[in-house]
Image (cartoon, rainbow, N blue to C red; front, side, top):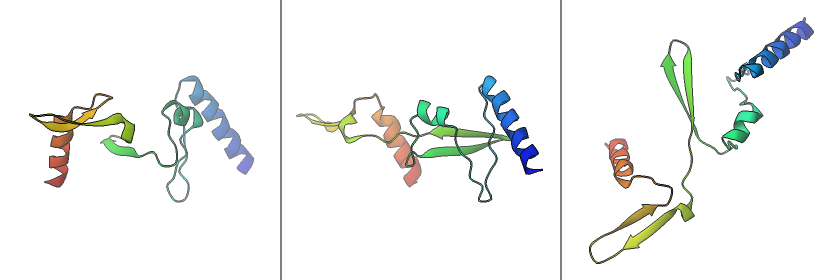
Length: 104
């Protein structure tokens, strides 16, 4: 019986790959494995934060978060102002508002 179950899962997985969908069965702890093709595409490693959101009606959204590297941030200072410049285009006003929202 275990072989039939494995074959069934294997067949479903192959069919899912053709449609670019993946099927995962949670472990006893509720863990799932993200397929390697997705991990590679989004550069997901063991320390990559992923936000999981329940969208309702059985839909779960997963967003891969990126940490900001030190070399992506430049400190600037002149006679009128000082601040941070994010090389990859992070809007500092959006960042400040997000921090204020978190802090309350």
